[in-house]
Length: 91
Image (cartoon, rainbow, N blue to C red; front, top):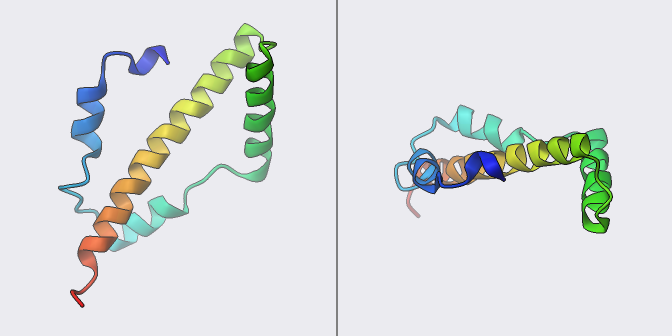
């Protein structure tokens, strides 16, 4: 993933969960974000072609974009879960 090569410090800073302070509404919204069924089907198809080494250059670019967005979404959702956990009353 060329776009993220050498940039882990930036991602760590943006997505660290220790300072997770999203509102409960925003956190819930982020947790509801996901690819739809047709997008998941496309991702699965591209993944299969990637594993078999048959992706075209355009398909590789598309697949890398899906992977990048999926990774960023996962990081956002980790931060959202941490924010919701902070909002829970102590038991």
